[in-house]
Image (tube, rainbow, N blue to C red; front, side, top):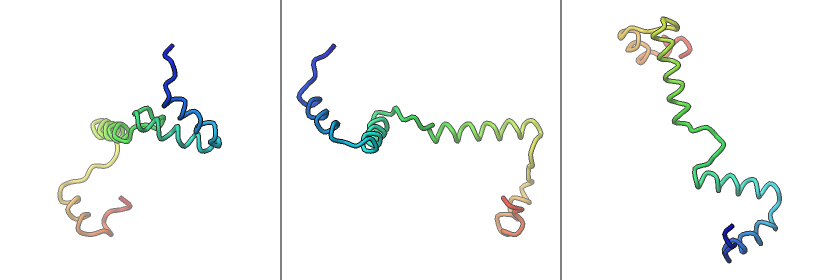
Length: 83
């Protein structure tokens, strides 16, 4: 096991003074800093959603619009039907 450096000792002195909430917050920041966040990656979630929508479309599920319908909805909010 590697020896604890002076920087590690200094960090531990501050760590011991923190409340539980402060420790959780700092841990979250550290995880985000090194890319180990417990929260799912937004890009991955977006890709998954797009893939699911694509599979539904290719499977004939859901609603598809003609080009004219899309243009009309873009110009007229009342024709968007809750989109």
